[in-house]
Image (tube, rainbow, N blue to C red; front, top):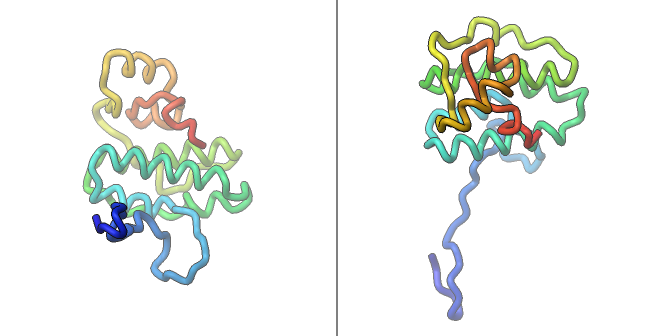
Length: 149
């Protein structure tokens, strides 16, 4: 923090996510490829904030261009749970837009169920309300956890 005239202000600003390699000033929505890269080095709390940001940006993209954010396979996050979560998310969002899932999602699934929100109440809610794309891959997250979109 820097002090200026008696007030305290942040000394610097951190850019959390910029999709693409060039900072040309043009806005580009966060893609699953970029989201996966950001998840790789993030702690659990930041991961959920990044997922929420992706869902919000996806929601505001024109329906006819949204699929471009999903179609390219992201590199591994180095955590199988999150790799499968991204596949389930891609399938779920594509289905909501009336499209088939990208081909890369098909082989991704877990051998053991995963409950990202692991309290007794959250587990029951997830078992009852997890979207099909998540359930079939062994990821149990309640639909309302994805309702940012």
